[in-house]
Structures are given as structure tokens and as C-alpha cells.
Length: 167
Image 1 (spheres, rainbow, N blue to C red):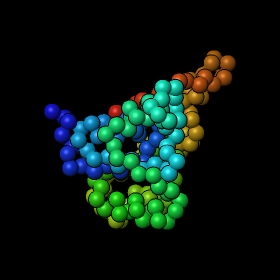
Image 2 (cartoon, rainbow, N blue to C red):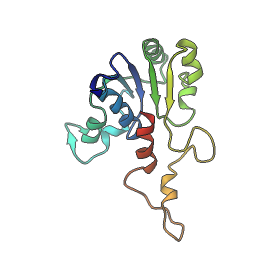
Image 3 (cartoon, rainbow, N blue to C red):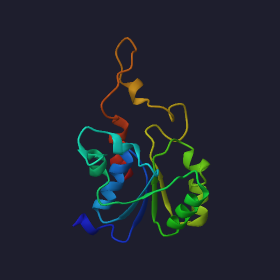
């Protein structure tokens, strides 16, 4: 029933690791065409094991099923032009870069909305795009010992909450 709910929708996926790839995976599961844009060497999620499928993490394969993938150097002007051409045929762009990175690359909302005014642009970040908690891995500090020492958790609680809301 939901398998074809998003047929005809094209999503550009600039996400890595957990929340973003899970959100875009759900969109692909519902029929959207998802084009994952990764660094030429592949996204960080490919290295998160154990459990491997070939040279890539099994988690990477699980979170990125049903997607097309293109490797680009986003610091190269030719790659930015490729992205702008993709945007012209996209309905949605989802990114999970550090706050401000897409804007510095010339791929922020304002720049891309000027090319495609009806583009839906979703920025995923655990603690917002602005403010004191917008940079860094704050879930480590929010789950600590009574004496104030941080506790590193296996998974990011904020990622797990964000993925469903973004999809």
C-alpha cells in the first residue's frame, strides 16, 4: 500500500550515518527516487562495523537500500554544477551536514530555492542549525555520570528521534 505512495518524487540525499539515511530510506521504501550524494571516497557510514557486506558496513547497506548513489567532491566547482542540475529535477533535498556547510558550499536553501522555488529543503541536526548546542556531539554530555563525567552512548539518542520526524 505505501510502497508506491511517493512514486514520482525525487529526493536528493546529502546525509550520513543514522538519522538522515534512515529518513531517506523510509522515503525510498515508499517509492521515492532517492539519489544519495556522497564524498568520492564514500560516506562515513560505510566504515561503521562490525558486520560487513564486502568492504562496506552492513548498517550502511541497510540504511541506504533502494537508493541511487553518486560520489562527488563538493569542494570542486564542477561537482556543484552537477548538484545544481540535479536540483532542477528534484522535489526534496535532505542534508545532515554541520550547520552552515551547505551554505558555504553554495548549496544552502536560499541559493537552491532561487534555482527551484518549490524545492522542499530539510536540514537534519541533532540540536538545531543555530545556538550554543548546534555544533558538537552534545548527547555525550547530556548522558553523563553524577560526578559530571560524560558517558559515550552506543547510538545517538537525538539521531534516533530525528529520523522519523524528518521523513
